[in-house]
Length: 218
Image (cartoon, helix red, strand yellow):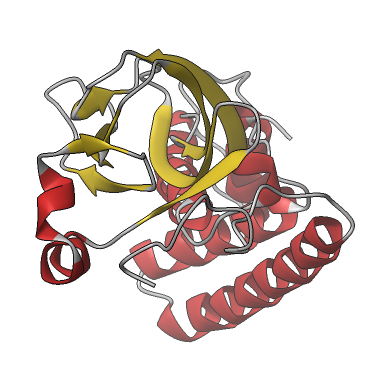
């Protein structure tokens, strides 16, 4: 369903199908959509991004502004690399923060002013190679009436939550709670379907068996 269809359905269900009600329902639907998107690493939210990293690069910024967070990465054609907590890297191998050598992992740094992902490489790679990143993309906003959410099974959950928000907006708290419970049920079902889908998919996940040497933070 599109943003307009969801808002219209909720307004008609309330029995107050006017522009003010539809506009308020639209705002609630947009917020609920982002909340559900941010809830987990949905299979449909994952994308790949490839970027060439010059030799001796200590820190890189991913050029794709639609990426929200890192999940995993591959260095070159066959080496998996993993994200590391900054404090763990400092404690176990502090020299990796500034030295050049065998690239074994990365620390996700604060995003830049454009909202792009910034990575600190541990260590700065001695050779230029491609870094293939598996990332969660930013929530695709429902910016127009024709915009449609892109997660499987989301329509039912969005309707229930938006309907509940409109009821609460109109001070009908008990009925709103009933709709929230229905919405949680739909989201739980979405999660089950997503987990089943992920289990059938081949994913880029580090298993720790193909590193050229000992990773100090393991």
